[in-house]
Length: 295
Image (cartoon, rainbow, N blue to C red; front, side, top):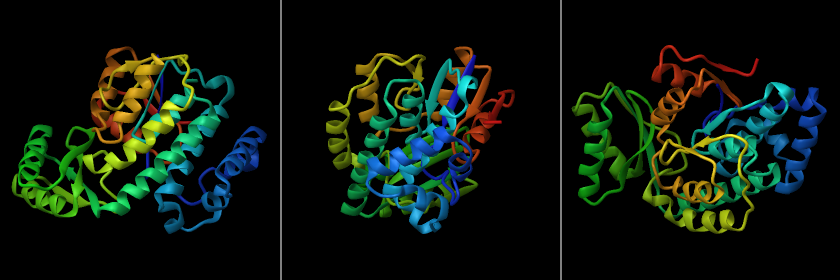
């Protein structure tokens, strides 16, 4: 079975999507439609901006979404997903690709999410860190220990065995990194991000996003979407909406998602969008997995 997967924030690069824009009339039409919806020329930043411009959450999220979705739609008849999934932000791309959301509504929700998250980041200084080579259980145990002492610290992204991203207050993450190293982590590396994504500190953004999601029409997708919050396949629009709201403060269970997709028959994973991060993670989750980008 063919599975299509979509990356999240962090996969962006200057120049992303320019080849598509220059060589595909469909891509050009969709990019221009996006410029119109957003009210500014995001293509100028994507194609010719600076890394700093592109790193702003309000720019990064719609940029990665656009590159991912347009890449998939420009595959034509080669795009025949039998299951989809996306990492964090990528879940919105997966929903559009599977027909649960229109291109326009997907972009509007991604932009609403980005703006709400940026506001939440500005309300309280917060951060994330990558923990390398420590068992999931140990990472969760240390996060719970730090949280019990009054700081916010949670396991945010279960990316692959031995690679977990933690999220929380700056003090909480600094303390957790020290404890992770003492417990045997090969690395505990603070990340250059705007805030504590997939943690309780995103609750203010969750309220805004929930209102936007509830005001948007969702359709029954043409194939199952494996969602981040429970790593399970979903086709019911009501369930999909509920999970999408919960995703903002819940962990991204990517390891379990890929394992479940393989158990359910995935034989080929195609990553649509910038970079090749998910291909690498999939191969770390299952060495025998056939994972590649768009040819």
